[in-house]
Image (tube, rainbow, N blue to C red; front, side):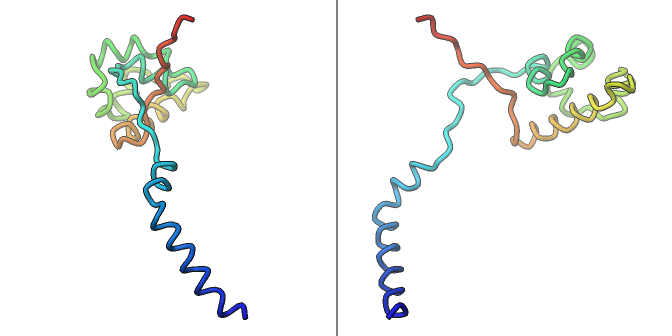
Length: 118
């Protein structure tokens, strides 16, 4: 008896999915961030966190804009003494890791939505 009911059950499920496919997709789609903010070096480093933002002035004076920082190599950051202290040796690795993710479009610094005064 169960063998006869499974094709019927599958057919019913498929008909439900095909008739409601638009609502199904719309309900589970991701929403884009409505606030487009120009990302500079300080915003990028603040997005990474973990104390990396302390290098904002040094990196901004050396690279100028974010695009130059995104193509920087580890040796260049090491010469600037980014993450040179043994206590914070992970900072250079964090900057390079998040720069790669940002270039691929897999990560963006969090943007605070504008606060409304109520």
